[in-house]
Length: 340
Ligand code: KG4
Ligand code: ZN
Image (cartoon, rainbow, N blue to C red; front, side, top):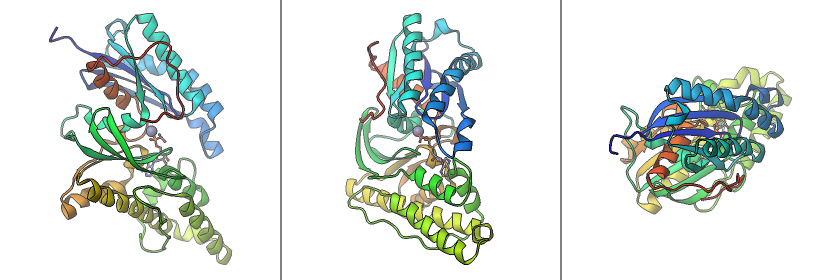
């Protein structure tokens, strides 16, 4: 039937956000995220606590998503869920729940790769947002990943560059921790950076071949810099927080943009999308906007609610798999290192 609605219920539980969304024909009807506050006091995600919090949150979050979308369980066409990559204990909660619910409702199950979903978030129907055309380059920047991906179709993606150690989100969060800021520090570095001088302090950029990244040396250079300066002046951080954050952010964005420029040059593709938690960063968003004027790129910058982990992106990936009837077998299991 032509007018039949495809309603996807999507579940995301790969790290420390329990999320559910309902999409109807690719349009978001609800997008609920329960962010787990419990990790803040530990300065990072504690896997065992994350898994337990997912178990507590998953039912109310799904209820809320269905209620807000005004969709009854029996009108759901398929369940999409994050199979990986992520924390095993966290993924298992979403995976088992999705399997049981799809089995109970007797509807198809759709497995989604979290990193592909960060990219496919650009295909969510949104007024005033253009969708990328194939082929395009996507830079996925999050707390767990840093990749440049050549995207030739919805599920035809090739990683052409990635980090050989820490992810860019870790570079933000670990630098923030060194400065005494709470977890996750990325958004705070961004906030202070807006009022600081990006050229106040200089940090070295790593030398890595090709399109790959490295951030572990950067984090160490921030640590040594702060140790050295606070030895001379114990109030150094307090007095210079905005300038330090601006300089850290400026260096990180420089590292990302250098590789992106190289990727555009090497592939001849100048349509560039960003995704993942760090794509919420005001500096990287501005750098991409500037590149449209400077180099004639066409850039795709996601809406804020689709940058950090959410289920809407799992839902849009699920919707495109539904159209291809690419359904998962009920014997499927979570995969913490899920490559594509
Ligand atoms: O995609 P995401 O929610 O989870 C993962 O899949 O990892 O990304 C979380 C990461 C964290 O490292 C967080 O500090 C970073 O995204 N982040 C930011 C900003 N907002 C979130 N980093 C820099 N600036 C921001 N505004
Ligand atoms: Zn993510």
